[in-house]
Structure formats: C-alpha cells, structure tokens
Length: 433
Ligand code: NAD
Image (cartoon, rainbow, N blue to C red; front, side, top):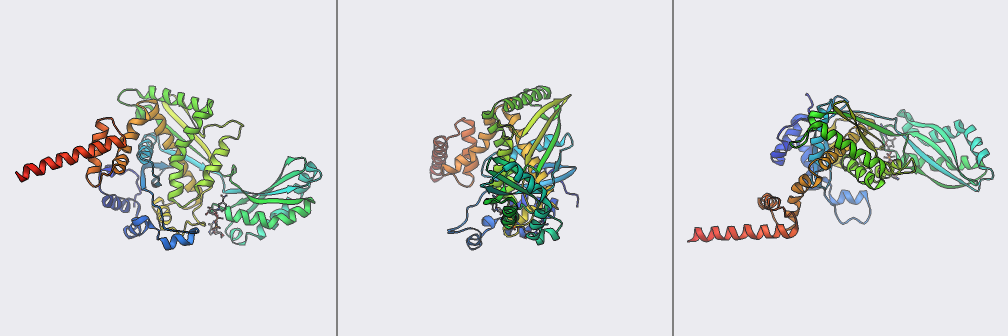
C-alpha cells in the first residue's frame, strides 16, 4: 500500500469516515482504532496498574496531523492535545514544507547519561583523571547490569568524569538505550556502578540517577519552504519570508520571546510524544535545559532566507522510545506507533521533531501575517460554545455566531445560545399557530 499523508477534505468528514480514511492510508485495523480510542482507550482497572490511588481516567483529544513528509516518507501523525488549532496548524505548515520536499531529519544514536555524584572527594582533578583511567572497567560493570539491552546491541559506551567543585566529581556513563527511552535502564546502571566507582575514587556516593539533559541524543530537522507556498492573500511569499526571519531574530535576541517560540515547537513535539505513550516531562526538561546551554535561553529552531526559500532548522534533545515504559500497555500508544509505521526510536524522534518545526512555522507565519488570534480563536470558538452549554448542532451554530460577532467569550456564547433558543421558540409557536 502506498502510504500517503495527503488526505484532502479530512477535516470535513465525520469521525467514522476519518477512521476509515486512516485505515485505508496506513493499514491500521479499524477494530483496533475503536478499542484504543473509544472512551479514552484505558479502563479504570488498567489505569489502576499504571499509577496509584486511581479514581478513573482523564481523556484528551486524539487528532491526526496530515501532509507530513519526513526523509521522503509520508507519515500520518497522531497528536494528543487539548489546545484548539495546533493539529490544523501543524498540518497546514507541513503542507507548505512539503512543497520544498518535506522535512529532512537525523537523530543521534540513543545515548542517555547515567550520573553518579561523588562527594567528599579529596582532590577533584586527580580523582577525575583516575576515574577516566578506569573507564573500561566501569563500562563493564555497567554492561553487567544491562544483560537484556546488551543482547539487543545496546549498553554502556563511554565514561566521563566532570569536576563540579573542589570536593565534588560527577561520573557520566553513556548508555545506548536502542529503542527504549531508557530512564529505568539508566537508573539501574547508575545504582549498579555507584559502589565500584566510589571504591575507585575513595569518595562517598551521593545521587545515582539519569540526566534528562540528554544532549548526546539530539535530533536535527530542516525544511526549505518555497516563497510561493507561504504567501498569503495580503502578503507576497518574499514578504512573509522577511517577516518570519525577523520573528526568528526576535527570539534569538530575547529570552521572553524565545520561551513562547519554544512553547510553539513543544505544542507539536509534546502532542506526538504523548500520543506515543512517551514521557513528555522528560522531553520538556531536556528541551529547556538544552535551550539554556549557552547561558542564555535560546530558541530551539531558527529561520533564515536562502534565495526565494525560507529555511528552518531545529535542534533539540529528544528521548523517546518505541518499547518499554507504558508504551506497550496503553492501547492508544500502541495504535499510534502502528499508524506512524515507525521501526525504531530514532525514526520516531525525527517525526516528533518535524511536527515541532511545522508547529513553529505555522505560529510564526500566522503572527507575522494576520496575527495568531484569527485562526486560533475561530477554532477556540467551538470549545467556548461547549463551555457555555451548547451541544450537538448548536456547537457549530454558536461558534459561527460568536466568530461573526467577534465576541468569542463565554458571555457571547451564552447570548448566542439564548438567541438560538428564542428563534427555536418562535419557530414552534408559528408551527403551533
Ligand atoms: P523499561 O524499564 O521498560 O526498559 C526497557 C525494556 O525494554 C528493557 O527491559 C529492555 O531490555 C527492553 N527492550 C526490548 N526491546 C528493546 C529494544 N529494541 N531497545 C531497547 N530496549 C528493549 O523502560 P525505560 O525506557 O528504561 O524507561 C522509561 C520509563 O521510565 C518511562 O515510563 C518514564 O516515564 C520513566 N521514568 C522517567 C524518569 C525521568 O525521566 N526522569 C525517571 C524514572 C522513570
């Protein structure tokens, strides 16, 4: 089957028709989609095995980003997110990027860092040198704790010692986690190697834990968008390129802007990370620590002009897995991996980061042209209508009324509902007469 992510009219059809289209284009099983997504896909009994003190589950919308092409392969990308307009915006921007060939992405080998803190060190510099001289021995200790992973081709790859203070050294053991996110694997290693390391260093062991600043596990994505693909009715493509490049410069110069710029990227990344059952707190922690690595908080993605193209580049650490954790247990996470058709964790990281770059492009283009609120509030209107008590067909009617009146507020939606009720009343009186 030729897998395509171009599904015109997808947003206009019913949920059941969308499911059929996803079955047709990705080969996903219709029954599995129903089992995984109806009622949130997770029973209270199953949830009770995930975390503690469970009362039930909390569902989030599960949408599909379309038009995404990464390294020449089309991907229909599941996104789990509560914020209106993010899925539509990512799909729209992915279509623009597609005009320039789509996203080109590469992921580092899946190396995670186990940290062992050494305290009460007598001579930090010479202790660090001694530890590095014993790195092969420490690596073997680590591999002994990772039998299953080593058998799959992963395991400890290197040992580094860093001096943090006169009396404190931290040892990093770099672990190739293959297709796992790796937190549990890495924590196991940190605890297993701590005592032998303390013996070598003649020091007291402090913490033994992974670092979420997994800067050896970065993903890099680029896209080249032709000017014609990003023109608007009011602005030429070339003007839009200049405006987006200016917006990128703003984020590069100002951490206040960079924080929101990166939030837009994480709208896309997190939604894919959550849909695939991965740990989004770990990904967030890594992304923002990486953004601050120069000492000043920086944008994770930047935009430049290259002739009549806009070129976007994103680099960020991204620890995601296709095995382990709760991935294989949560039916919706399993479904997502199946729909994506990924074969390994690096491929998944490339797709999540591409959707992040698409989300960034969509937000910058909107802000640089008509403003973010027009598209966002138009879609937000439906949520406001539901919050005001609209249901069924009323939701679209109320949303259209408050967008038209430019009053996308709870009050505006309540008034629109009253108007609809009055009209319905009048209608029934006429019929009764
Ligand atoms: P895990 O404990 O399930 O370990 C992965 C398992 O999968 C291992 O037993 C491994 O041998 C096996 N495996 C099978 N096929 C594999 C393959 N192809 N590649 C790699 N391993 C393979 O999961 P994990 O990834 O070590 O830990 C992830 C979990 O840890 C997440 O749920 C996360 O929320 C949680 N966690 C996170 C933090 C943090 O980020 N700070 C801390 C603690 C726990």
